[in-house]
Length: 235
Image 1 (cartoon, rainbow, N blue to C red):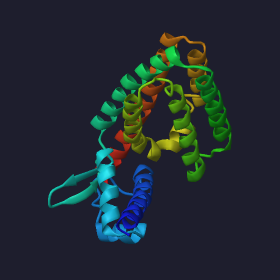
Image 2: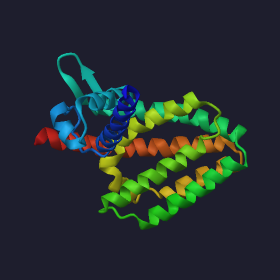
Image 3: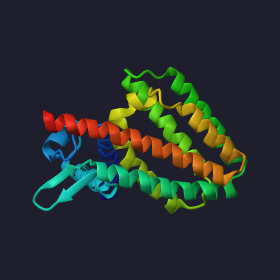
C-alpha cells in the first residue's frame, strides 16, 4: 500500500511539474510572481506534497526560486541574465556540435535531416497570430538543435544544454511572433546552412554559423526586452 501511494504521489508530482513548467515557459506567470500552493493546488488539481515536489524540481532547473519564509516565486528575467544565458549556451553548444560532427553516424545525420524537414513544414504552417502554431514551431526548432548535438557522447553536456535552453526559451516565447516573421532574417536558410555544414563534416563552418545564428537571436531578444522594459517603466 505504501509503495502504491508513493508511486501515485510521484505521478501527480510529474503531472504538476509538466503543467507548471509549460506555463512558466510560455509566460502564463509573470517574472517573480509568487507561487501560492493553495492557488496552484486548484490550478493543477493535485495536493501540497506533489506541488512541492514539482516546484523543487523547477527550482533546480532555474525556472523557480525559493526563499525561506517567502516560499516559491517565478524566476526573474533581466537583460544581464539574457546575455549570460545566450553567451553560455553558444559556448557550450558549439563544443557539443564539434563533438557530434566528429562522432556522428548515419543515425545522427538522419535525425538532422528529419528534424530540419519537420521544422520547415511547421514553419510553413505557422502564423504570427496563432499561439499554438508558434508553440509547435518552437518545439520543432528545439528538436533540430537537439539533433545537431545528439552525438556529442556526453549525457551531462546535453543536460547542461537542456537547462540553458529552458533559460533562453522564457525570453523567446513572448517575442516568438516577431522572431519568426522578422524580415531581417530567414530562419530556414540559417538552419539549412548549419545543417549542410554539419552533414558535410565542416566543424569550423558549422560552429561559425551556429554562433552567428545565436548572436543574431540574442541581439533581437535584447532589443525586444529593452523595449518591453522601457514601456513598463513609462507605464
